[in-house]
Amino acid sequence: MGLLIDEKNVVIPGQILAEGMDFLPAMNTYREENNIISTRVGFIKLSGRSINVIPLSGPYIPKVGDTVIGKVEGISNSTWSVDIGYAYQATLPLRDATSEYIQKGADLSQYFDFDDLIVAKITSVNKMKFMDLTVRGPGLRKLDGGKLIKITPSKVPRVIGKQGSMISVVKNATNTRIIVGQNGWVWISGENPEDIQKASEAILMIDREAITEGLTDRIEKFLGGKKNDIIQEEN
Image 1 (spheres, one colour):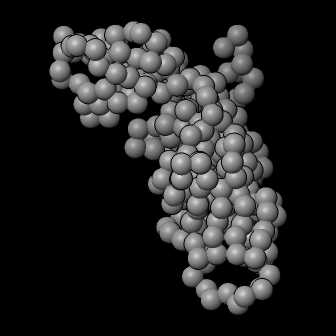
Image 2 (cartoon, one colour; image 1 turned 180 degrees about the horizontal axis):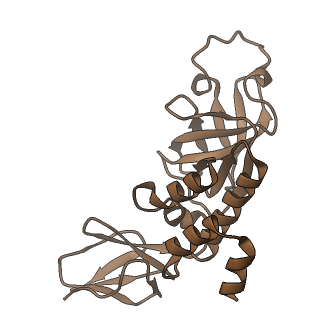
Image 3 (cartoon, one colour; image 1 turned 90 degrees about the vertical axis):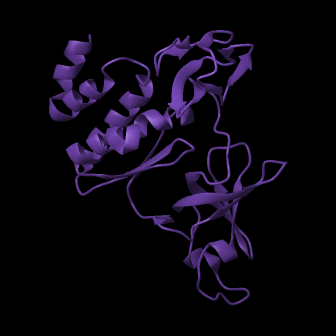
């Protein structure tokens, strides 16, 4: 009775994850009599008593409250269209872009221009999957400079780590500033281009090897050693 699969182990559809009533089915799982069963290929993530299966692949599905990174793709009289890596662009309304009073007909590009990167929060998702964003809140803003990389959205929790442990390892070792959007877009900034590149490689390594054992140790070794040494040992 209880949990049958270790956290982060890969599971398949139809696999029994837990027996008894100690756990509750959550994302991509369901209960059948006393068993909790997976509906997707992925790895287990526990949240209290709830069992989730995080898919190994698949597109980003936006949810209200998600913090995302996006690129401005269009400007109208009162909104910005923002690409967040979803089938539909998100909308940043004027009221959620700034607390300043903006006169009618003002040039909105002075606030956010084409190709600007922003970190924003999703405030609404309607039945047609159209989304509204806001950049009014702590940490939400335009991102200046830096480098953008993209990872599998479902691997975001692994890149961040428990209580931010994994991403802190990368930040501290490379002296960079990193923002991870829940849509799988990652922004990296720093004084040294080599540090930015090292951080990028580490994050992409986490993305590739998210479900393997001993990943944290390998990342720490990669960040602290020479790249060629790591490649030789892995080969």
